[in-house]
Image (tube, rainbow, N blue to C red; front, side):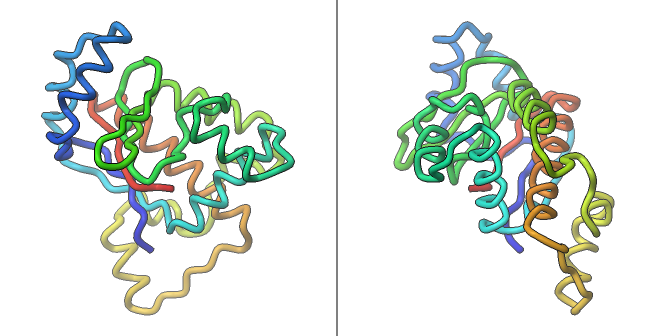
Length: 196
């Protein structure tokens, strides 16, 4: 396992000034940043399975967008020319609970700042054009959402956990992103994680 999304106040102090500057440039009140980072709720973790699962999800995004060459599609995601600009193309990503133009900041390493509102719109669009019934929960997804610690303990103790196919891992990551973005908007906080 090991790729989790987190909803809630995170330690983004090293990015705060750069995020605030970008929000000012695109017309978002940057004083909301303080509220988002100091949310009243604790952190909620949502399992994205592993890096391979997120990679399969992004391959699905690339195919749905019509790229026949995976490398070209991934490049479009990373350079911002994909219509799915708020997907987890980068290892380090944070989504804020408002609409704005996403940006990739160069701070030590590329760091993506996106919009939960736009991410939800892109996920719904993907759901409409996908052939694999995005939105249906694979086996154990609901268990993970009900109690992620219990879910991880059950796997460590040897409980069987197998997705039936690659499509299930794509569905899982789609649901994790959707649930994370919806919860971040509801709680007026950030969604962040290392999905890619």
